[in-house]
Length: 404
Ligand SMILES: Cc1cc2nc3c(=O)[nH]c(=O)nc-3n(C[C@H](O)[C@H](O)[C@H](O)COP(=O)(O)OP(=O)(O)OC[C@H]3O[C@@H](n4cnc5c(N)ncnc54)[C@H](O)[C@@H]3O)c2cc1C
Image (tube, rainbow, N blue to C red):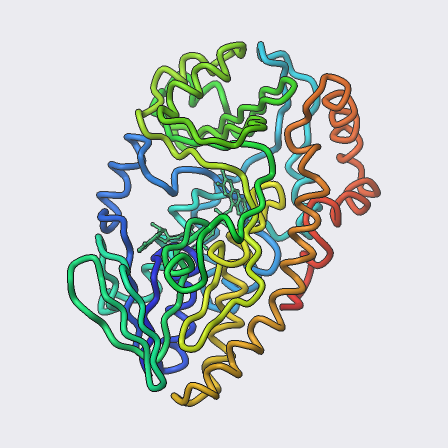
C-alpha cells in the first residue's frame, strides 16, 4: 500500500517512519527546498530556518521516540539547559526556575533542542533511500473509491491509497479537502517569533540558561546554542491578530523598550524571521475518505500548551499502528482512521484546554499578573509545587506512559 505524506516536519517524518515499519510505501513531499545538514546549518545561521527555535520535548512524544529507538539520537542534541532566569526588561534578575524543577515538571523525561534537530533525527531514521521530495506540494486532491490522486506544484500527479496531511498549522491539505483555515483556528491573542543569531560575546554571556526578559504583554527569551550562536524566543500580545507585512520592523518596535543583550540581538534579526500568530487548530473530523490529517494540521495545541511537537510524534505512532493492521479497501482504511482519531483526540482536547487556561499566564498583560507569576515561579522550585503545577502546564497525562 502507498501513502503520500505532505510535510517533512515532525509529524510527517514520524508518520512516514511508522508507515514504513508497517510495510507501506511512502512518498514525503516538502515545500521547503533546503536539503541535508549543510544547507540547514547555513540557513540556521542566517536565521531563516523555520525550525530555528528551541522546543522542550517531553511527554507522549518523548516516550514514542524511545519506542522508535531514537531517544539517544534525540538526546544527543540536548542543549542541557540549567534553568530559566526571568529578568526585568533591563536585565535585572527577578525569579529563577532551576533545571531540576523543569525536569520534575516533565516527570524527569525532557530534552530541549532545536526543532530542526528533531526533524534531522527523524529524517535520518528513514534512511537515504526514502522518497522525500523537496520544493513540492499539493495543488489538487481527488479522492476516489480505490485511491486518491494528488496533483503537485511541479505539474505531476501521484496516486496512492492514502494522503496524509502533516503540513502544519496552515495546512494546504486541510484547505484543499476540509475547508479554509478560518473554520478551524482559535487565535490565542499573541504573536510569536524566533530567529537564530551569531554573536560569540552574547552567546558566552547567556551561559546554559534560558533568559526571559518580561514586561506586561511582552516577553523575550534568549538561549545559547553553541560557543558562537544563540536563539531567540519572542512572544507578545497582539489583540487584533493581523500579521505584520514587515515582521522584523514589528519586532524592533514591540521590543524597543527592552535592554540587556536584546537590542544587539535584534540588530541581527533577518528580514523574514519565523513570525506567526499563536493559535490552536480544532478540526471536528480528522479524516475524509482516503485523506487524514496529523500534527498541527488538525491538533495544534499552541506553544501555550507547549507540547505540539510531542503530540505530533505521539499521534503519528497511533496513526501508523492503526494503519498497520488494515488492508487497502476504503472501508478498512476509514475504520483505522476513525480509531486513530478516537484514541488521540481526547488527549489533545485536554492539552488544548490546559493551553487556554494558562494563556493569560504565558504572557501576563499587567504588572500585577507578572508579579503573581513571579511568585508562582519562585514556588515552583519546591517538589510539592511542581506536582501541583504540572497538570496546569502540561495537561493531565504527560508523565509516564502516554494514553494515546
Ligand atoms: C515558538 C514556538 C515554540 C514551541 N515550543 C514547543 C515546545 O517547547 N515543545 C513542543 O512540543 N512544541 C513546541 N512548539 C510546537 C511545535 O513546534 C509544533 O507543534 C510542531 O512543530 C508541529 O509539527 P508538525 O510536523 O505537525 O508541523 P510543522 O512543524 O509546522 O511541519 C509542517 C511541515 O510541512 C511543510 N509544509 C507546509 N505546507 C506545505 C505544503 N503545502 N506542501 C508541502 N509541505 C508543506 C512545512 O514546510 C513543514 O516542514 C512550539 C512552536 C513554536 C512556534
